[in-house]
Image 1 (cartoon, rainbow, N blue to C red):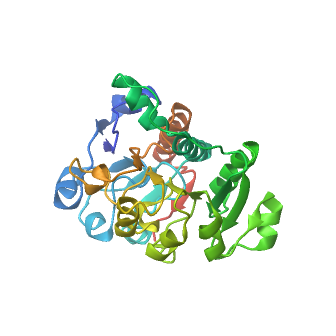
Image 2 (cartoon, rainbow, N blue to C red; image 1 turned 45 degrees about the horizontal axis):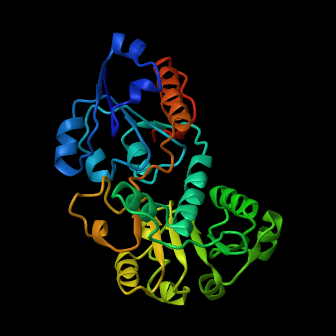
Length: 317
């Protein structure tokens, strides 16, 4: 069979799992770039199996329908919004996944909050360029950390914030005071949340209900010395509104690890926005997480080849 390993951006998939047994019996092809549309279809049309990294390459129905040989898809994580699971099921294609540790993203969110608070990047760049102090930071202790979405990752960031001595509040559309109390944080209504947070960290699952949830009005409510961090999904924040707010100095700054188009094009306008810290979607990109992702992907592939699939996300209809 022909097996494609997609979106191996750093070309190190082999460093995290043993592909040799599969390469001995099958044709395994590694791709380090990301395609879409017809070029993607042309590339993958001969393939029987796809090993995909969650939410990098998108698989809408119009792509899936034109992959005649595809029999199975193995994704990192048990949830991948880039996959049209209903279409895979209709086509008789099984989809299996892996566990997802998650804590790496929470750690990154807290690191970004610290970097913004202490102006780490401007200070480091100044040193590289022969300069010295260029910015005055602020304390995290005593500051208000707003968690937008108090699920698994949001709760982890809340715990990290409390360890710093921050006052932690939370908001989401379905969140209750009781749920917040269980996590030892304070519930805030939407307007209060945006008006009182010194730092906002986003941790919501992407759905139509939360697309553009952080828009011009929400950014206008924020303090002029407040920051917002997005390690969740790019469409949750209205990109136009964020750019306008940052260019106008309406808020102190922002950091994002997620984008509407990934990898981010070299000429993308976000690269020139002031007070915007950009990272190349490294939320889950740690050696420990990649060991889980690639290791369990091959474990699931072996199980399927043996006729006993594991961690099944979507069964053939």
